Every structure is written in C-alpha cells, then in structure tokens.
Image (cartoon, rainbow, N blue to C red; front, side, top):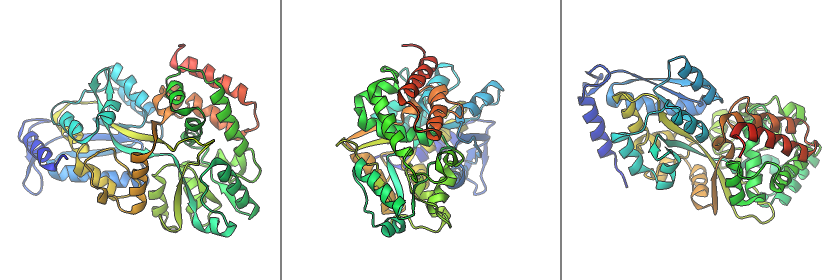
Length: 433
C-alpha cells in the first residue's frame, strides 16, 4: 500500500526546484512553489466545498495559489471555449472519457510524467489506470467515481404505504403503484438535467442487453435499432407513461434539474418518494438537513430485470493537465495521493477508485456500503454516455440527451421510431461504422 512519505518527499523536492518563477515561502516558512494553478470541474455546492478543502491543503503544503472554476454540466463546451480563446486552465476534471480522448488526440492535454505518473501507478489499479490512457499514453486518473446504480427513498413514505424495498423490476413497479394508491407520488425525475435520463437508460440496458452488448453499443458496434435497445426503451416508456408516477407529470419533470429533484424527495416539503441517481445524492440530502442518510433516507440497488446479475454503472471525474509546469504537475501528483482522496472522502458523497484509501476515511456506513457495491458487483461498466463523443452523449445539446428528454415528455411515442432517430444521431456523431 502506498504511503504519503514518497509524495511528501516529491513535493518537497519539487518545491526546492525553480519553477513557475522560482521558490518562495508559505506563511509557516516552509519552502514552496510559486505560481497559480486554475482547476476546472463541474462541481458546485457540497462537492465544490469538499474539493476546495483538498486544494487548500495543497496550498499550505506548497505555497501555490489555486483557483477553482465551476463549469457546470457541460465541461466539454467550457473547455473548448477556453482552449480556442488561448486561456486553458491548468487542470480539468472531466466526466466524459470520450472528451478526454478527443482533447488528447488534438494535442490539448499533457501526458503525466515524474511524480504525477508515479502517484497514479502506485495508487490506482491497472484497470483504472487504463481508463486514463489514450493511445498508450497516460493523460489522467479518476479522482472521483460515482456509483450510479441505486435509488434513494424516504423511509417514511415507504412506511406510510406499507412498501418494502423492492429487489426486482416487477416489485419496483408494484411498489410505485402502491405508493401512488396511497396518495404519494413515487418518482422525482430530473429531466432538466438530461444526463440523469441517460443513467436510467444505461441501468436498464445493461440488464436487458447484457454486458457484452453494453460494450458494443457504447462503441456503436451495434446499432441503436438493435432489439435490445428497443426493449429497453419499451420498459422505460411503460414506467414513465403510467399515471401518477412522476412528480409534476411528464411535462413538469422536464423543468426539474438534479438539485431540485433532491429537494422534491428530501426537502422541507417533499413531493415524491424515490430518486434514482448516484451516491452523490447522499451529500445533498445531508446538506438539506431534514432527512438523515442511513436512517430516514436510504438507498436500494437498482432492481434486477429478468433475473439479470447485479450490475453497477459507474461514472467519474478524470483529472487531466492542460499545462505541464511544475506547479501543475505537483498538484496532479497530490490529487492522485492517498491524503487528497481521504480529505475529499471525509466530506461524504464521494467514492474514490484510489486503492490506498482507508475505508474509515468515509464518514459513515452508508458510503462504505456504496463503495462495497462497486467492489463486489458481478458486472461493472463505465457510464455509456460518457464514453461516447460529446456531441452524442456528453453535453447540453448532445443528441442522446435531447432525444431522451423528448421521450420523457412523450413516453408513449413509437420506440422503434425513437431507436431509429438515436441510430441516425449515432451515425453522425460517431461516424459511420
């Protein structure tokens, strides 16, 4: 297991070297690097606050000033604008591997070297290191992973309706109908944050299509008109079109973003009982303050469809460097360290693929359980839309996003026709193959 000593020594060595204008001293008198490192990520709210604790610790260690910029959901578009304008940030946390690959092939990213590469090699498994590799070169690593195959629910709503945790899709649908019959709207669906709709599709598809087809569809090696895609859309459409299922109705759901959906279930005046979204919901529940994670707010694994083996869809935010000065690479090394990950983990709502992190760093048994689901699932796959080109699955105007929003608004539409439109978009965005 890697320890902090090598990284601390590395940072000290870097601090003694001339870089970014030479050396200076931080307030404690410890020699450190000069310069400013700008970091861009999608995080806001609790996630931003927790990440800034990591940056503050780095500042104290090295004397480097850090600036954090929140790019919102569409990190790819934000970065492209900054790059084209000649003002790229030093580091970006990118949720789409497809975007990372595109930027690397255009020469916009810097390969990791020295202590940054050593930290990744020491603290990440070969599988996770491979996810940061493009054409044989390591460009990044996943600071944060997201376990997206869960649904959060209010225990008081389940108790009122006499509902138990469902394990199968049939039980899931039956529980939702029982909630509706008890006068409790089952689901908050954040249709305004279209990435949440791709998560629903992926969790159903991995069970309907199986892991092999999941990989093929992610690479557009099978068409979106494949029977497995049509069957997945049919299952989702049947749920979304059932009366009294969705908070605000189908049209209203398109106006609800992710943050609002958490409030719709776990706020002061909850309007729904269930929110199917990732582990990061936990920190938002805690921030809201009314419900307690692990007690009045719990999660259940995404229900099994037709006896499929347990599967987990994961996402993540990959740290990459757009500059290669010493201060930037020192921060990359620190972000890949055990200490950095444990600081972030302590704030909750965070799972890391950094293998050196002590489980006790997580704030409670709920988060440890979520991490355990990732470790022990029979099938683990990366978020499909994040693997796709940004124009298809990873941006505000992405074709898959827009088409699934249209489907949410009109879930009785012809799913064969919808599959055809998804395939047309995939041909355009992936390139015919």
